[in-house]
Structure formats: C-alpha cells, structure tokens
Length: 180
Image 1: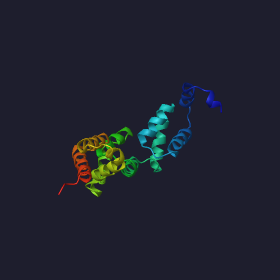
Image 2 (image 1 turned 30 degrees about the vertical axis):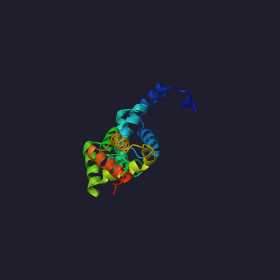
Image 3 (image 1 turned 120 degrees about the vertical axis):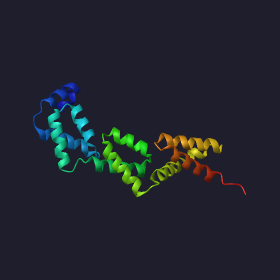
Image 4 (image 1 turned 30 degrees about the horizontal axis):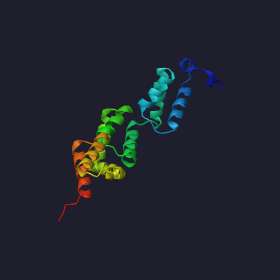
C-alpha cells in the first residue's frame, strides 16, 4: 500500500538501489504471468522499471536457462496465434515480431517453417480474413469497388501484392459467377 503514494521516479530510484537478483527475477516472472514474452520485451520492461542492467541481464539469462524465455518458441506461438485468430501476411508478421524484439534469423526460420508446412499459407490466411469481413465487403454493390476494398484490406494486413490480387479476384469470382 505504501508504494501507491510514491511517484514513478521514486519507485524507479528504489528499484535502482536493489542488489538482490531474486527481486528482479520475481518482477520478471510477474510480468510473464499474463502471457509469454520475448527476451527483449522482458528486458525492456525491467529496465524501464528502473532495475539495474546487470541484474536485468542476470534475470533474463536465468529465465532462458529455465526455458521460460525462448524467443523461437515465442515467435512460433505468436505466428500460430495470428494465423488462427487474426490472419496476417508475412510482412505484417515480420513487423510484429520485430517490434517484439525477435532477431531476423529467428523470424526467417519461423516464417520459412510456416511456408514449408503449407506453401499457400498466406493465401489461405487472406481467404480467412476476407471471410471474416464478408458482411462489410458484401455491402459494396459495385463488384469492382468490392474487389478494390478487399485488396486494400489485405494490403493493410501485410499480405504481398500477389496474394492480395489472387484473393480479391477469388472473392470477385465467387460473388459474380460468369453468365451462361
């Protein structure tokens, strides 16, 4: 309760005085309770909270030794979650992983494995995104405008131009079957 009355600067100053690595490790574990995080996120959080960098480094190393922090496993889980819940193209996934502090090599490995499992994974994700937004897209009466909106939606979600073109063309073909 006493901590509530203190300013952020005062709490940071107190944390800078801490010498016990167990306190920093405990703070890291509390941060990880909500969801998995990357090493960079944990490091950023502890450093911004005011803990000494040597103690932060020690906590991150210890959590990695225990298998609690694993950037590759985090990246795989992030990509799987995105594919399942909020489909994104590879470009958007790369951007998100970069913001989470995942190294380029790890990104390459995870996204290459994703592509190896299914060569059309981005096209399938694009189709799922269009299916989710079908009601709003179907409100657009003009087929050309609907296709343009679908393309724009996919582009905003990080799909490459070829995938945008194919998926929006499929949407147009389904909505406007050829006349006999």
